[in-house]
Length: 481
Image 1 (cartoon, one colour):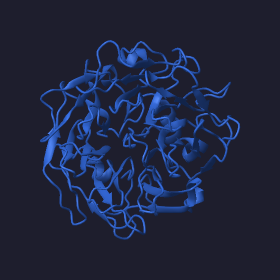
Image 2 (cartoon, helix red, strand yellow):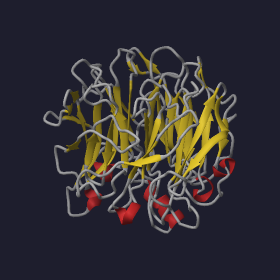
Image 3 (cartoon, rainbow, N blue to C red):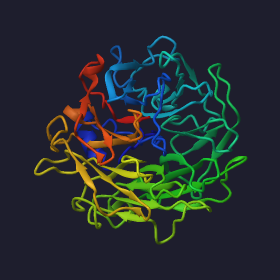
Image 4 (tube, rainbow, N blue to C red):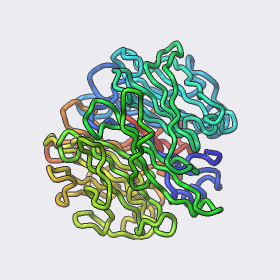
């Protein structure tokens, strides 16, 4: 991604076992709406969630990939109401080819302002790694024909589409699209239209030369009605890329787009989410970092999550973030153990309706009992003072009411999303296990209530529920909504 996208540094060993060393899970698009409002691709008033199986075989083409949208209803996600799209679907540009990895990044937003959410799909393996970005347009009937978003420069045609997020970075009322290539990022100004129209492109540099951009997300940290862009990236400290040091940066939105002249340095990481944890109207930035101490100088064994406070002046970083969390921190369930992958994914939205955003944290390689790398997800409460250190809960496939069973190498918590799909004002928790059943993959939906996430009414589904083959494909490796 000109290796494939790195979702988690620690996923490499697991992925090698499953794929013969071909690739790892890709970086999360981090496009969950900070407010908890879900995507609505068909405009029926209920939230929808899009998933990807980027390594699935399509019409005999290995790792061609497909995406699926599951529509929401009053009781949550309804797998029976799903649409599956690949590059062999009528109206979608291109064709399914081996190693395209269609769906390796996803983002959702109403790009053409027609009232329907549109789905942006990255295929960084397209054309031998040049990559592609496709917009699938929402409508009353759900997703319809697609349009290609061209890379603006030759340099961008290096895993173009490996990262995606959306926001109104210049505050003009049109949604813009941010696209990451291997070590580059660009903002394509909106509106984007089904006839292929876009605004100008802005290259987004990093304060230090990036070896690879790991994650990208957007939100409003200073409440000025312009989206701010957050990136994490690695710089090559030695001739060996394994010695790279992860860093983060935020660029505040301005009338001319992200202000790259005043970078706001942040902690590094491998996953990003933005949302209002303390209810003051400013989005916080959560940065998950699964790199171990020897990889990234974080001083952690099993990963960490740093939460940076938003303010009128933007993100407040420095030596005293709102929270610096490991599994040895007060109020965080579990223990800081080597290779847990704490921070494999992060998401923020209000679950219990109290006006404070909860923080969900994936722990993709958590051991459950003696079962290695089964995976877990932790949900911590928001409060007026920030991330609460009381009331946190851990969910695994061994939790009462969660469908399935604890199995080695499932990686429950590969990706997570807090979003309101039922329309009741409470964000539901969607969790994926990209390596479930040796790489088939599966998705879980847990309802949100005034008391928090509950397992009552929890449901799970995989590719078989959508009429797809239950073979290796990493179903749920990416999700957005």
